[in-house]
Length: 308
Image (cartoon, rainbow, N blue to C red; front, side, top):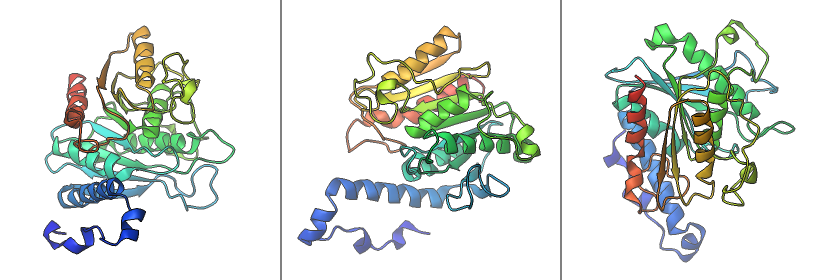
């Protein structure tokens, strides 16, 4: 695919008044940016392999309609024996994979690091915790990655996870609660451990009680942590990325950072001034706050500190 082959008319905004009303400029620009990110990724991405997570149907599913999938991306020039598993956000109701999935994998591939993107099950399961299906998929994905260590030439003890918003909550579930199985073993693969060795929660949601199911009502300033996380013996070092005007309060990240300090687990905390929610891998958020565009480099440098 060549960007020059894209019809300019297909990207133009209709001058028709009705079209302007139905597609506000901000939404159009956001949609255009996501489209361009996806197109650029398809042009420059390395080897991509799509694989099923489960031999038949996922736990509590009667068919494969939600189709959880793991996407593997091998760098063209491998410089590390580590791997990073990426969880897009989307409130556990959708997946913002266009700006919180593919371009993040591309970034790490360009650094010579193998990457995977998890398309976990959404929307939220009925009658179960909102994160249960996604958590099951995440634990299964880690086990698949560990089983592929020799084939992919990675170190099974250099698995990092990085996730956004709901995916940030999933990152915390995967990294703090790996000694708790989210599903019953179904095959030999499930005998493998599902702990990870580093975590990068990016504007994690649903961490504090005043925002257990949405934005933080009290800005998270005087709220206790939800009981989702076990903080078990395999909880790894972390690097937190958050904006200080995020309605999913930066106190979510601060609370977990504080907890890690009490456990003597190393961690980094990056809070960006005048930055809100959902910036993903975009270089700016609504054309402002250019400094947020450097956050991926901060995450990468933190990984290097721990030998990834």
